Figure 1 (cartoon, rainbow, N blue to C red):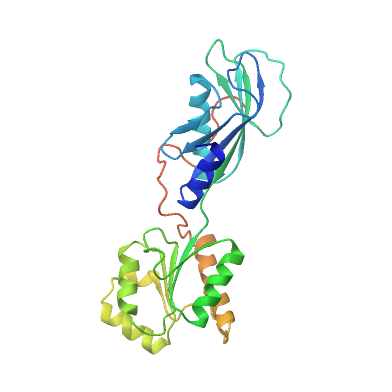
Figure 2: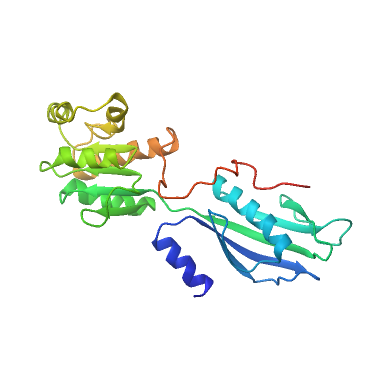
Length: 258
């Protein structure tokens, strides 16, 4: 499988990874410009962007880039003076191997977009799904998937097993559960569920920001605005299916000399 095919496979599976590409190499480095690799959140490297000494630096920087969600230009330079073009803003580390050459590697983290599960075959549900695509979010409709990896679940069925859907989403750990219902009906459904305070905070009904929305499209806008606020302001987790990297704190993608 080529790197391009592997990238497509990981994106389909919503697996976070870092795409590493050697953009410059100076002998006696074993890698060459154009060499590529995939780095997974568990530290696995698929492909080749340098020997053992360079790999350790690349792995550490890649995990940091994945945590921060920001691209990094990594420079792996041998200890001592080296004639190598300057790259302002690059992350510089020292290659501990005596035989190591100089490398410049671009690390591009690929983090899956938020996944919104939309339940229902109603005009509001259809408008929600269409607007998610405009925002660049992934969408799962009924039957596509369970809620295990969803950022948010919006129930727009206007009836049916809504209580069971809410319970399933909460049990799956979804941080935002929206129910399209009137205040009275929504409250009655939640009262019957006997939710804890923590669970109740995750359920939004009436759903959406109070912008006076009337049409299905306007209601969809108000719902997605609330979801966006949850992601951007409240820290709603967008990729609960990703493996964590607890040993690489945010902001520590680069260690060594700068």
